[in-house]
Image 1: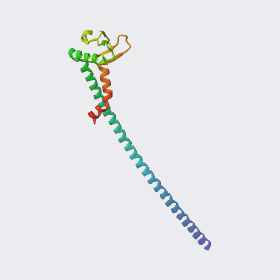
Image 2: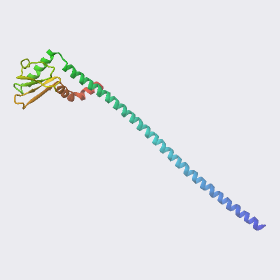
Image 3: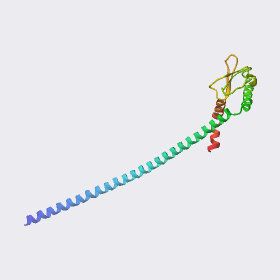
Image 4: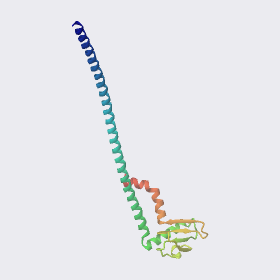
Length: 178
């Protein structure tokens, strides 16, 4: 009976030690799980915040692209409108402009030959040039050339407008779009 009692006491002590060890291991595991869960929660929150910022940034960029495309469209319409206005001007206005172009080129070409659009019906005498030729590539304005064909002055409306446009586009954008 004494052996039995001793064995039961020994078994109870071993069971108590085992229960204590199990409780300790469980407490350590719970602590580690809590730390891992906290770290994962922080990582998840940071990822959500980062993705949110990326989405906002992406949306703002897309918005800017759309606005920029519309601004470009507006500027292209303005360019095309100005060009059409010049090309479709009345003949008397065009003649006056062409005479000014010829006069402005006299420093470079003394007695130029003029190439005109097929829609322009001006004579060499009216323009003050040696001769007039039609060039189907010209839609408005003129190209002046010396007698030898070595020197050309491109005074097409498109060329002049594009030169001014390229030079002034920055200030024009600042004025129109701030």
